[in-house]
Structure formats: C-alpha cells, structure tokens
Length: 91
Image (cartoon, rainbow, N blue to C red; front, side, top):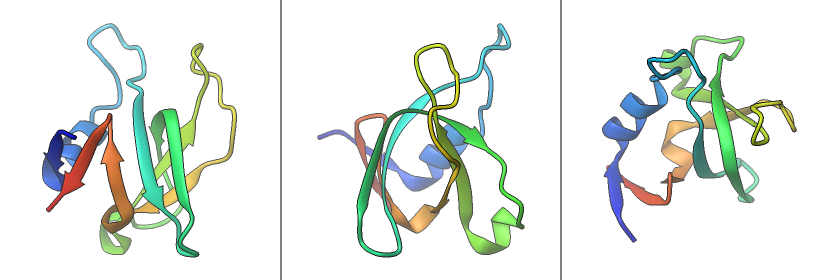
C-alpha cells in the first residue's frame, strides 16, 4: 500500500474546491473513539462547531456521486486517520 505523510494529507484536506469551483472529494478511513473503523469511499471536508486546530479535529461528510450528502458529519481526530485516498497515513 502506498503511504502519505499526515502533513501532506492535511494539506490535501484543506483544498476545498478545484479551479472550476467544484468541491473536492476524497476517501478516508478513520478509527472512532470506541475503536470502530469507519470507511467513507467518497466524502467532502466540512466545518465543525469548535476550534479544530486546538482540538486536532476535522469534519468529514459522506456524499454520493452528485455530491449530495448521504450521512451525518463525522468529527475526526487527525491522529485517528489511517487511510487517505487509498494511501496509508504515516507520521
């Protein structure tokens, strides 16, 4: 499996739209606090109602192929992200 550094993954996460203005999608796998692994094959970056830098959190929302929301927003700790666009996330 290919690898990606966490800092590079976060830089990609921060790109919210492409030059044509279309939202950028990504796939992500993360571990919830209860230990459950969650895989979202297509998701978009969203905001959270908190200071994400201090809490080391990011928001992700699953979407369908038309970019319509198909689930709720997941608050994700950046330390718990294990896969990004098919690549293993490493320090």
